[in-house]
Each structure stands twice: as C-alpha cells, then as structure tokens.
Length: 426
Image 1 (cartoon, one colour):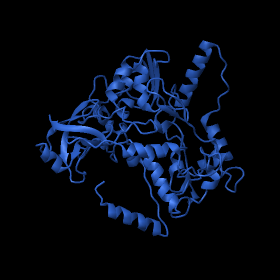
Image 2 (tube, one colour):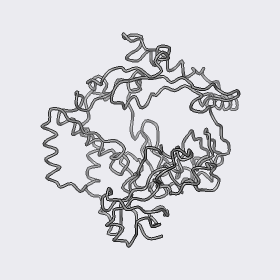
Image 3 (spheres, helix red, strand yellow):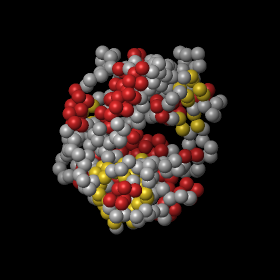
Image 4 (cartoon, helix red, strand yellow):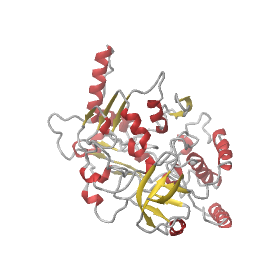
C-alpha cells in the first residue's frame, strides 16, 4: 500500500494503546476482490482492541424504524445461481450473475426483467455483456422517468410520480448514521391527475397478474400506514416516552434528533448463541485465497473507480448545473506511469481489460498511487437510443465496460476496483 511495514505496526500499537479509537471502512475497501475479508478485519481490529460497542469506538445505531430488529438475521449460501453457482445472501444473488442467467440457455433461463430506477448497464460489471443480454430478452419492464442506457431496452416504461410529488421516509441510511435521527418528508408538489406512485404501479401489476392466473391477493397496506406501524412498534414508539408516529413527525419537517449512539451490540446480535463469530471458516479460507493471489503483470495497472460530489452514480449528468465547470470524466494516472508509456497529459488513451476496451482522455495526477489509474463511475452516455440530451453531450466512458464479472469477492459480488488493465495511446 506504499506505507512502510514498521509504520503500520506502530500505527497498530498506537491504536491499541489509545483511550478511544475506531477503525472504519466503507466503499473503498468493500468493492474489490477481498471486500468481505477487509470488512471482517476492520471489525476484528475494533474487537481485539476493546473498541467495538463502546463510546469513542464503533457503535451500532438504534433507528426509529429498526429493520435489523424486525428480521431474524440473514442467511448466506442457502442455494446458488444456475450458471456459475454463485452464493445467495438473504435470498438475493449478486448482480454479477445477471447477464449469464439471461444468456445461458436451459431450464431456469431468465427471459424477462423488471428494473426500478436503476441503470445496471452503467453500474454493474461488464456492462457490454449485460447490454447483449437485455437485447435478447423476451420482455422487459422499467419503472423510470427516462430512456437511459438500460431502459432503452424496455418494452414498456411506466413513469411514477416525481421525487417532489411523493412522501419519503429513509429506512435504510438511518441504519448507518453517526447519530440516531428520524425524519418524514411530505410531498412538496401535489400528485398530478392520472399519475401513480411507484407502490401503486407495483400493486397494479400484481393485481393484473393475479387476475390473469386466477389467484387472490392479500390486502395491501398503503406505505404511510405501514410506516406509522413501524414507528409505533419501534424503540421510540408507543412503549417509549417519545411515542413516535407519522403524525408526530409531520410536525417536525426538519426531523428529530433521537440522541447519540450508545452501546447496544449484545442486545442486537442475531447469532444463535448471541456471541460474535470472530473466526468464521469462510473468512479463514479467504485469508488463504488472499495469500495466494498472483502479482500484477509488468505492463498492468490496477483500475479503481471515482465518485464526485456532483455526480450521484449515473443520475446527475442530465442537469446542466451539475455538469458545468471543470470536466471530471478523465482517467487519472500518475506521471511516472504516463512517462513509462510515452503518454502526454490530456492525451486520448485506450484502456483494455479482459472484458473490453474504452477510449478516454488521460489526466496526470500525483494524487494517484503509481501503478493505479482511476476512472469515474457512471459516465458513457453517448449510446444509441439514449434520450438524455445533456448527458449525451458529456465526454467520458463507462468504467463498467472494463470491470469483470468473473473477478469476485468471496461473497460472490464483483470487484469494481482493483481491475487489471493496460493503458496505451489511442
């Protein structure tokens, strides 16, 4: 990693000796071939130094709508995908399996797809292979506002109400917060006549299917009613002093502060014996895989992604105020890597990986580690059929035309960073 081993050892000693310390890692350590291993080791550092579940260390949230408390815990590898035998997690398969499950003939072949607000052609590994798979489907439905790189393959696009036309409660990111907070967002604009919320679209589709196959649907509870029940049954609901409900939150449009994080892990653990599994066999086995990984070739560089403040995945590129100014689409390279390949700053280059090749402008940057190049995520809009006028005018290429659906973490998820590539003059 470019840091001398003795400095790393001293950092570990200082961490262990500190009164309070926390080791934290998120996207950067997760989206590569040893992401699960890294996250395990991050928490082991907190655990063995006494910093797990303590103030000043790593703490769990206690959100008003507690999705952890209402589940019995996840499961892993209960069954596997049809083609590559990738493990499921919580009933879901990694997206690395999606294209091959559509392309490989045989019993169980995926022949239809529904996408909801996603753009997997730009956000999943080997996007060109997924394009081929989408083009061969018998039917595709998208719930979306735009004809983008993915929805252009849809037979039917159903647009829901716009973001300002429906309410919103964040049940996901409050699980990851640094403080317990809650907020309910009411609609800013009225729902247009004839428009449907996304949940109304889903119910309509279910009713149409049920009527066709002759089954009876269970009654459906509107989302606001479900959210109100979740709040009332949560840790700050009817049995607490706060007595939170949706009606209460409507009086606090900027949200409510529910207090700092506190130690609670022993109560919230979902393991059968209510103890932390510090050395699961899956992780010990992955240590061996890590030790045996091959070294990069002499001409290889490692590709990592990049996300910018004004670019939320691929969504924000069709708004002029967010794409104006300094361009942010370039491939960043360390000057020594450019010199070794006789490349100039600003030159157009070809980037090759096992799965594809893209052309993009290279930009010299001493912020890059030698041997590593960076291409931002979510660009590459100039494709036939895309109806995003502003986004189509932007330069850049999709980094996921280079990422490899065969380069996987032990969980089965694809590595979106650390992808071996070669860079040459275009």
